Image (cartoon, rainbow, N blue to C red; front, side):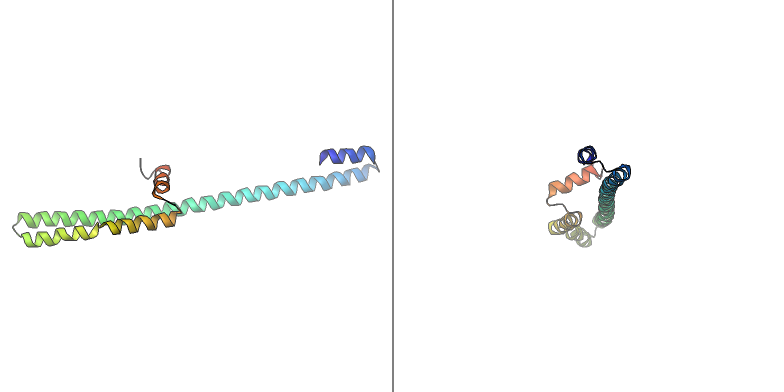
Length: 138
């Protein structure tokens, strides 16, 4: 662009005003291109930041859900142990059977699949990498 401008000035010089006008047109095109590039990069950063924020919110939600279920399991286990020690083995069995319902394999798979979908992970490796990169696990 600059070489073409220089060649036209050297070979077909028509005056200072034409040269300044040509330079202004070229400069305007260059500045416009830079502005468009900058806006595109800023928009991409904004989108990426929004994705990371959404992922963080989802991870917190999953953490809260898992923590709630683990707390419920711990309480049921303590109740079962107490009932067993107090001689009520039938009620202890009932309390401990509830734990089995809470941690069934299909429930765990369901929650992991939902998390993978929300985070856009294609497989468990990507999910694990995301958890490590965001310092959810060490």
